[in-house]
Image: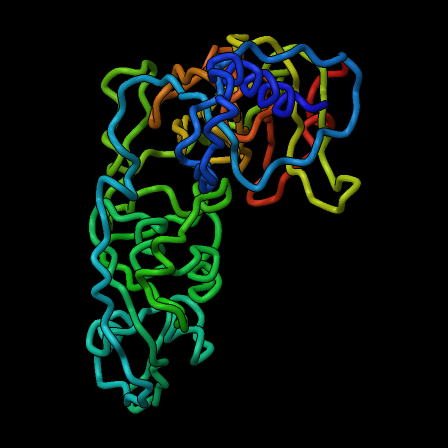
Amino acid sequence: MTRRAARSAALLLVLAGCIPAADPRFPPPTAAPVPAAELPPEPLSEPEQEPTVEAPHPARPSRPTRRPPVEQLAAPRPAWEAAPVTPDARLVRTQDVVVRSGDTLSAIAERTGASITAIARRNRLSSPYALRAGQRLVIPGGRYHRVDPGQTGIGIARAYGVPWSEVVAANDLREPFVLVTGQRILIPSQTASAAARSAAFTLDVDTILTGGEPAVASGRAPVRPVKGATNVPATTVPVAPPSAAPGRFIWPLTGQIVRRFGTGRSGERFDGIEIAVPSDTEVKAAASGTVAYAGDGIAALGGLVIVKHGDNWTSIYGHAGKLLVRRGQAVTRGQVIALSGATGFADQPELHFELRRGRSPVDPVTQLPRR
């Protein structure tokens, strides 16, 4: 019997003891089934201890049956919520233009409403985009959004109800996926209504990594991270990523690996490892870096910390019960950044741990010291 079934059976026994015996003189009326939403909640209980054997992790439910709250430092909303985007894209028709004397690609983009990169790609132009008077250029049509200060890729994608990954592909965006204030972004066309798509918009780790940072003002450098959790930069202010290589990673904690990196028995891909540990175990940064995200915006991972390192490395820590850092904070190797928990889709206290190089997940075990 599963733990959930056992809890349900115990609940039924308790309820049965509270119901008086039926009077045989008055047969009970036929009652409609009670909607699930009106049933009393299951009592909270301590998680049962599982045998400490290494085995494939059980399949995750399609949605969490119960999500313990994530305790975290008081922090403002992430940039994509603090600086919401108005879907005011300009519709540009496909057209030909003739280059005037003194024209630049930037001036033509400003005049037509299209983006520099879209025009360059359509006409096979290479930087620094040298033009000559009388040259004919094709302006690719579509909806172009102008990036305002503080806006993020996530905010733009959500406003139009388009997956951020499709925006990245349509605009041929590359590492490090930094938007610039005033930049025009081509919005891919969709058939469903924007409102319906926006309501269904969900976050994942890749979306946060590639679309979570606010736009940088032209000619201005991002601010430097701070050492403590106080006085961190506002969420709408871009923070400079670390430049130094992370060196050798360390284990974020000690425990039993209950799920490994790679493809599982049912064919699903798993991008990290999961380590079973007691609740409130200290979770340490695997290397020095800058906190890019601390929150619980990804339902499956619950309490989540994402740390960016130099040389395009990122470490990810999920299922935390308590977060001890904030976005824009500099952390050192071995610094405690969270306490473990069973939040998100975890079925026991455990840590979800990932390492990524760019957008590619890497088996953490291959980068960590042998135990």
